[in-house]
Length: 331
Figure 1 (cartoon, rainbow, N blue to C red):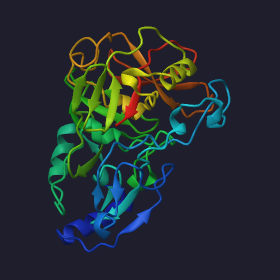
Figure 2 (cartoon, rainbow, N blue to C red):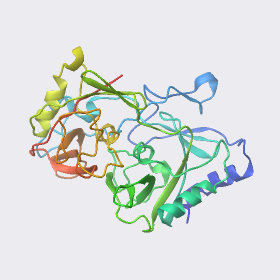
Figure 3 (cartoon, rainbow, N blue to C red):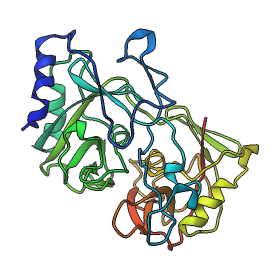
Figure 4 (cartoon, rainbow, N blue to C red):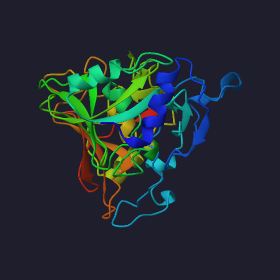
């Protein structure tokens, strides 16, 4: 089953491999237009994205770490304090084009297993290129943590409580999925369960880590990480302050990563220990959990997103809890 609002786009793809569909810029939800990484409009074509980057979490929401929303200045360094690679979307050649990553996205199809989802995507008319089921990294790229139910731009037509398959296999024999009701990322137990799928085309998003001294650079996402995080744990406000004051590698622009950035480090095929590349990062154990800078959007205003490395899933944790901090900067 395909969401009805997307039928026109599939028709455009089917009619021509070189679509003449008009390009119309759309509202990107809480994220707004294109950001500093991907640049749409190269050479006069608004659908060409040069210098693709990793998209921001898109949240505009800040909290003071207690029980109320607040201006970002109340706790500097949280997610919405930074505006880099703000997501934006265009209608291009019968699909939705991400102006940061350059990826194009199909309608949503419901009630499919992971295998059937792969077959569905591969069977779509190619247009500008072949379709595929997105990897976990690609699926996470369209999360909007400033929204919920769904935690994505409404342009995608994702249902409020939808769980979507990625093509990424989980070590437990299932598949990695993203719940777009709130934005949770987790390995699924059963890849045969009927869930929703969305298809993608374009150059694959990959993480490419290189360790150099005290830092680990990712040429795929344009992010640089501390190779060894501080050994102690922090509540959420203290974790933010720790990274704001970090000077690793003689850099002074470190920050606590947002949850989308933190998820890029998940080693999805790990079978034991920490779900991170321990050949690149040191001082990290399988029981560790790391704070992100992204507040959890709910009525309590007193929780934030964290990544638990025992499973590699994103979790809502109370800001008073003790977690570790792994700092990041933009290359």
